[in-house]
Length: 234
Picture 1 (cartoon, one colour):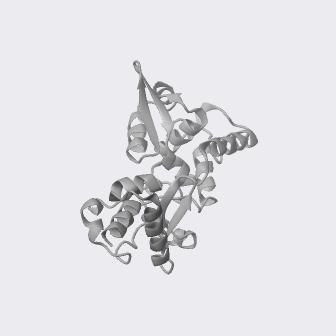
Picture 2: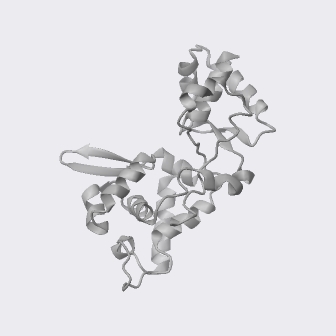
């Protein structure tokens, strides 16, 4: 029973899918077959719950059932992402791997805070190469949209071609006198995200690490995927 609670806690708190090997290391169980049996038992426990244990090619994850997402997505930690960081994220999506200096050149010094925010939220990572920082998308970004980043990039490029504006001006901080396209790339990402309700993600509560081992499935039924995080633009 203790092993089952530990696996439940691990799936709840992890921001990425966990393989059987990873779950075995967490629990100390040496048999992968036994770990799988416990996970399958957990899946049955959640059959009548708002949450589900989902198995993908990357491993197992705990998520909100897709038909409930529209009602709870506004509670996720990414629903308050501002327009500036969204523009930065669209840039990184198109240009990755991209130098931080290039983002700053396009968006200005405000982009330093945007990059910091996106990194903190786990959507991008920075890598130091010499005196330069390189920005890349994370697996969390792919789980957020429910598709591989290459596919999202391809769709975004097609959108820019269709809109007839592939210039960098669409990523710059807007000014009152400028005429901006009706649907810049970061807004396209908003729409793309709403079509990908199968995206898998988790909300991590600050005290989860201490309390999860004591929680029941009913108590942990507060977790939500962030597949609809970009819908509200401040």
